[in-house]
Figure 1 (cartoon, one colour):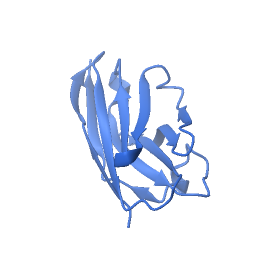
Figure 2 (cartoon, helix red, strand yellow):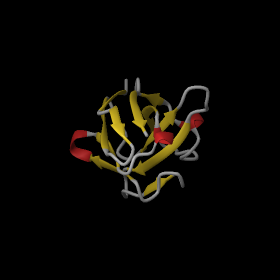
Figure 3 (cartoon, one colour):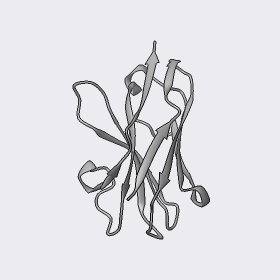
Figure 4 (cartoon, helix red, strand yellow):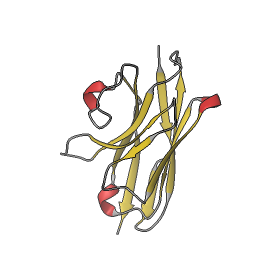
Length: 125
C-alpha cells in the first residue's frame, strides 16, 4: 500500500519561497511518475509539475515554469517542490501523487492512483 505524506506548507508573502516535501512509502515499481497538484477553493485540481523517476524527466505547468522546481531523492523516495517568487494566485492545497506504470497524461489527475492528504500554501500580497 502506497502512502504519501506531504509537509512544508505555510503562509508567506508574495515574492517569498517555500519547499514542499512528500515522503513516499510502499512504492514497489522501479520507475513511476510522481506529481504535484494543487486545488484552490471553488476550483478544479490542477497539475503543477511531475517527474518521471526512471530518467528524471520533469514537466511543469506554464503558470509555474521558471519559478517552481520539482526534484526527487530516490534513495528516500522523497519528492520535493521548491517554490520561488510565490504569487497570491499560488494559494491552494498542494497534493503529491503517484502514477504507476503504464503512465497516463501527466497533467490529468485521473491517471494518478495514490494521493497524499495535502499541505496548505497561502501567499499574501
